[in-house]
Image (cartoon, rainbow, N blue to C red; front, side, top):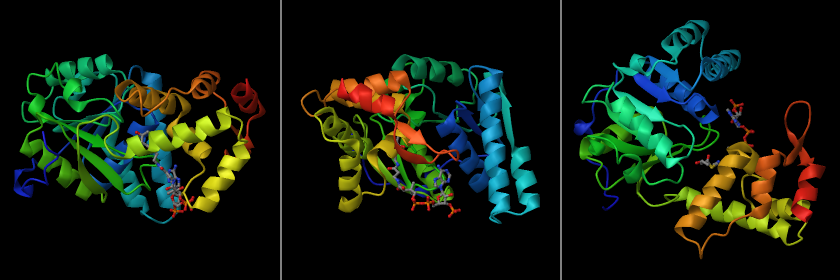
Length: 303
Ligand code: 3HC
């Protein structure tokens, strides 16, 4: 199906409560954005209470930072904190009319999750996936009503990146698409409607860029040279800092998905997999800012 233009805004459904499946960094970042811009209750969930609490701590910490920066006042901070709750019981999502997931990028996990959530929410609820490179159509395969599933892809760091890719999957209906466009506008993001194809638009480009940066070091170009080339070429971020921001495992997974879909256009990176497995890439200062490449990472790549 065509990634058509935006349908009539009047088709959009109202949203009085948001449900977020996942409490990891990406999910927590956009849960904060939903509560701040939609001013409605937002509930998050994850596999266990520890993960949920970590997500809630992150959101509350970011609300405090916004208050310290003077972006919101004390009353607003308290109101936002009160609007965000966590649960490990998905039945608490029953009254959500927009449910978005950012769980592990594994097709069956997402399919099963949506199958379960559909038995809990109302038939009117819109479902959204923040998948970065899986097929939205396939994610909705176990749904009774796949027409209510839409792709809604954020970028790191969510607070700053102005783009959302809204994925118009073959069975997505106009009401879901219109709701996604209205939600994106309320979040003050620029939404583009893309086709349901691996990596949509941006991750296809980024997978290429990050994969080639990694390949350059694998064939012997020093990390520093790649960073210097990027800086003088004018890209906004050092590719290795970007990989760290996205997460090494996520980065490796995105590259794999692209390789699986387009084997001749994307290669697998041995080094990226080993770096992700070892959990090393950047050397950081006490504040967590990158100050170079970790020596262990250099040794892994040089193998
Ligand atoms: N969380 C929250 N706020 C952040 C942040 C973060 N991680 N990083 C920066 N900010 C805020 C800063 O606090 C600052 O806010 P302030 O104005 O209130 O003080 C503001 O952003 C600007 O910060 P900087 O001065 O550090 O901004 P820079 O000019 O260095 O730009 C950047 C930062 C916008 C992140 C820029 O480096 C950039 O565009 N990098 C590329 C990021 C990118 O490509 N993201 C896509 C990743 S792919 C992805 O996520 C898809 C997934 O599917 C894999």
